[in-house]
Image (tube, rainbow, N blue to C red; front, side, top):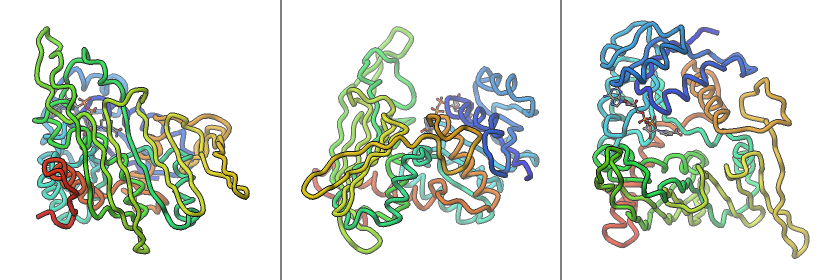
Length: 380
Ligand SMILES: NC(=O)c1ccc[n+]([C@@H]2O[C@H](COP(=O)([O-])OP(=O)(O)OC[C@H]3O[C@@H](n4cnc5c(N)ncnc54)[C@H](O)[C@@H]3O)[C@@H](O)[C@H]2O)c1
């Protein structure tokens, strides 16, 4: 199948993850179009060097993304830049007629997101999606199958979260993700929220309103040069939403996104409790699917080790373990299929879903300011 030629804008942490996934495309046992990285852009020349050294297919490097977008040999772009740059750069990528896998939160705020979505509407020929890899863990796919098969009966509640502990280290130097000017007003919600919302939104669960409690505990951090600077983003967020499913049934959904969560190392989880069944998946136990077994009046949590049975089959034997980099490869396989117009059972987060995410998180900010529940439809 024909290669899709990629430019990468933003050669940091996530730019490298994509490049590494593209380098092991042979891992996939399906005829999925291969991403070929031909051009890279970063304002930091050292960041570009890693790509030039490791990828012989890279024939162009630049510090100015406009030069990359002007190239006819770039079909698609992966853009992994600080949030403050999403609006301008995503719009320019889409206007250049390239397919785009952008990063969350897909615009630093709701207005920026709306401008990106206007560009999407002007260019239906461009396939545009937002990165979110955790639903591609096999045990999360199993949870999705249970939801789709309506095994839970009436849903009682849904809990979704994405938590980290690393910011408990107050000696950790500041970076752009801990500054409001570059990361945005949403703070931890902008950084982590879309990850928690991909499965719920895709399952058709719509939050009607939200009550949010936000905390900004760590107010300053070392600047890495011997000084101390302000750290002005929200560290932790807890949202309670009244949700409605596709049949109009209501249930509470709890979403937590935390950078100060003792004991959590990149812990993503989703738990669904229902009248007929309950189940959960957490990346802290990455191969396991947990479900409730009921016999008479007794209930017991069961743990099934699912092994390596992802959405897109690979050369890895199904008794082996699945991990973060595998989920990245699976997400990229989904995006490449979508870009090539191939059917995908569980596709990447869509621009419309980012619109709902921004509405929810904007309502959460308002809720915290006014200390009340905010209807999402109440937003201007
Ligand atoms: N999907 C995930 O799991 C995941 C994980 C981490 C970050 N992210 C998202 O990825 C994006 C990037 O995060 P990261 O962790 O890779 O950040 P990073 O800081 O590691 O990398 C960002 C890169 O952008 C470059 N850059 C800054 N301004 C630029 C400009 N004007 N033109 C070109 N390059 C420029 C920087 O030099 C840096 O190399 C963010 O949107 C973030 O939310 C996603």
